Amino acid sequence: MTRRGRFAPTPSGLFHMGNAFSALAAWLQMRQIGGQLLLRIEDIDKPRSRPAFAEQQMQDLRWLGLDWDEGPDIGGPHAPYEQSKREDLYEKALNELVKKELLYPCFCSRAELASIGSAPHGLSSEGGAYPGFCSQLTETEQAVRRISKEPALRFRMPHRQWTFCDAFAGEHDFSGKALGDFVVKRADGMFSYQLAVVVDDAAMGITDVLRGRDLLDSTPRQLALYEALGLTAPSFAHVPLIGDASGERLSKRDKSLTLASLREDGASPQRLIGLIGCLAGWLDRAEPVTAHELLPHFTTDVTKDRMLAITPDMLDWVRGKSICDD
Image (cartoon, rainbow, N blue to C red):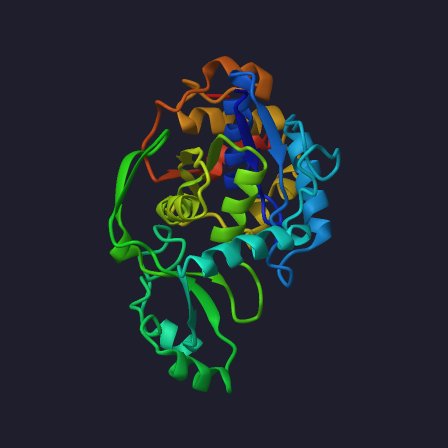
C-alpha cells in the first residue's frame, strides 16, 4: 500500500519558521519513501480563517521548493481539500457517535471552563481536563438547560491508558481520565479540530501524520475517535517546535519571523532549509541546500527536544547578512 502523508495548515495567519519545519519534514518523509503528499486547508474555524492566508501559505510552500500530489489548487480523488466544504462528513460521524451514546451535551459557560485551569503552555492542545460537570445530567435537567443555552457536544473519553510510539517523540502513555472529555462540536455549531481531522485523515487514506509537538496530546484523543468510529488510525510523528532565543514559542503574530518577512529581507529558501536541517540534526552544519538535496539526510532518529531555539545570528545567516557561513 502506498503511504500517504499530508500537510494541513490553518489559514489564520502567515507561516513562520515552525510551520516551515513541519511542512518540510512532512514533505521529506513522504518523498524519501516514494509516498504521496496532499495539502489540506483546515479552515473549519471560519471566523479566523482567510482565503488570502491560504493562498499566501501555498506560495510560501512553493518558494521552499515543496510540492504536493493532491490539494485545493490541483484537485484529486479526495476533494474538496478545504475543511469548510466537508462539514457533511463531520455531521455523519457525529451522528454515529450519538447513536453509540458516546456524546453528551455540555452547558458550561466560558467562566466555568476557565475555572478548570490549563496545562503548561505548549504541552496541551485542549487545556485542563474537563471534570465532567455535565456528564451525568438527566434528560430532564438537559431539557431545562436547553431553554436558555445551546450546548456543546462532548465525547466521553474512555478512562484507560492510551499508548503509542511516536516516530520523533518516542513512546508515550496517556491516561484517558487525565485527558478528560473533549468537545467535538461547539455550541455555535462549529465542529472541533479533533473530529474533523480524524474524519478527513481516514477519508483521504492518510497513513502517516506528521505535525508539531504542540499537538502530541491530541493523538490519544484522536485514537479514541478512530476506535469509536471503527476507523484505522495512522502512524504519528511530532516534530519539535521552533522557538526564539528566550525559549518562547514562535507565533503567527510575530511578523518579523514569518516566511513573507524573511523573503522581503532577502532570505533564500536554500538557507532557510539548511538552517532547519541543522537544527533538526539532519545536517552537521547550516549550509544552503534545497529540499531535494536534504532528502538523503532526513531521519526521525534525531533530537528529542520539545523546542529548538533560533537565535538572531541564525536569522541573519538566513537573510544573507552574516559574513561567515559557519
